Image 1 (cartoon, rainbow, N blue to C red):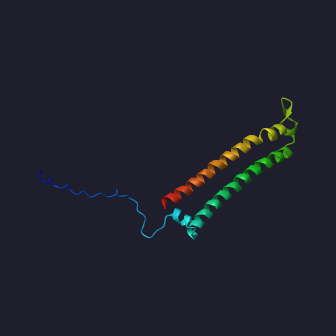
Image 2 (image 1 turned 45 degrees about the vertical axis):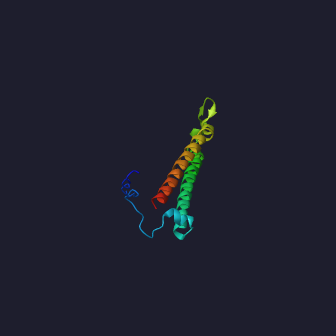
Image 3 (image 1 turned 30 degrees about the horizontal axis):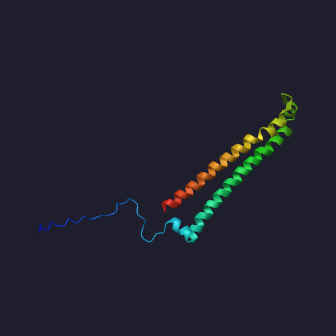
Length: 127
């Protein structure tokens, strides 16, 4: 018979310490939203309000510029007499000038809406 070997030495295993721990008794924002509490609803309403404000600002800016073209043509009628390659300038402004405006307003809205949502996600992840 072999002599019994010494039992292996006990090793204490712990989780790594994190620098930020949630305070005891505090709920993360994601949990507040999942439970549909007043705080969670406040965060969601804040996101909806910021997205609505962004949509109104972009739409208003688009309309001001779009309405500004006919106003410009009414104030300066000389522009209506100009033509480029036999195409009147007002047609060019309204026909070709509107599409870059639509595309730039759409790109601005998408970029800003994504930034709002990213800030909201960061806020949720922090809690």
